[in-house]
Amino acid sequence: MPELPEVEVVRQQLKTKLIGRTINDIISHHDRIFNDDLKLVKSALIGKAILDIERYGKYLVFIFDDHVLISHLRMEGKYYLKHIGDKKEKHEHIFFELDNDISLRYHDTRKFGRMDLRTKEEYLKIDPLHKLGSEPKFMKENELYNKIINRNIFIKTALLNQEIIAGLGNIYVDETLFMSKIHPERRTNTITKDEANLIVQSATLVLDKALALGGTTIRSYTSSLGVTGLFQNELLVHTKKGESCPTCGNIITKLKVGGRGTYVCDKCQK
DNA sequence: AACGAAACCTGCGCGC
DNA sequence: TGCGCGCAGGTTTCGT
Image 1 (spheres, rainbow, N blue to C red):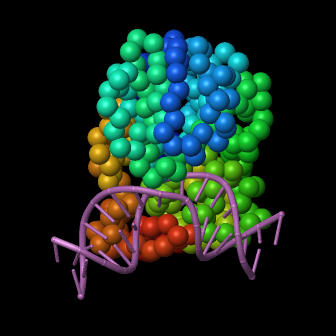
Image 2: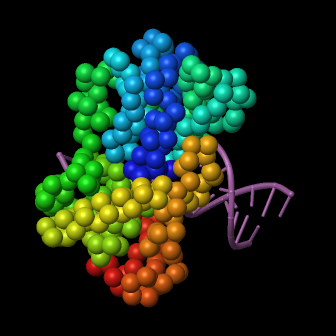
């Protein structure tokens, strides 16, 4: 479900509700969400307070005193705030039972999401965060160019690779490439410095604007945690197959790039 | 090492 | 109505 703006919205919402709350119990109904042994997770976190919630790219990080819990929502992960004892809904896999009668529930229809327990000391230095690329707004001049010029993959595939650039997903890559007038199937070794820097600038703009509108909501139900953004009304090409290009009027087409549905204006994007 | 495809899951919409 | 297929805002693993 979420890319950087949607995860950031979740982070901000959770923060207002959860800072200072203490974990009284953790209940798991599906044993593949936690990558670590449940007993280990419980012994590290039970009795501890949530001190902060950080975000790196699409990863959420719950900060405790000695440990952190890194959460990736993948395609469909969501957090719901309920009351302890509320009926377990389908696809609610992890319950974090907090003080103040709060039951923080991790909901994931496809069970793709994952959580990793790490120590505060090392969590930025090891998997899964240590190889994460820079977010567009923090990228330096030519940083993207230097990372892709010696590779020979589709530019769309490169922008979806979180080790190259962090935070973009299928929707925002399409929008970024449209704004940059670059075709998603351009090979990375043909991208110029100016084009790479323009891509970073466009990505920064798209992500900022999407965040300001609360993210994008397509093909998704409303959640109890405000992931009902408005940026879907601002999309220029993604989901617009058969419609007119807002720049030139040409019909927008859909193709597959790296197995992902991709929307493009063949006239504008070269 | 690098690349592309398949795998991981479940649900929904569409065509027949 | 029922069935099979393709598709879904992501990442990891497998095969070449």
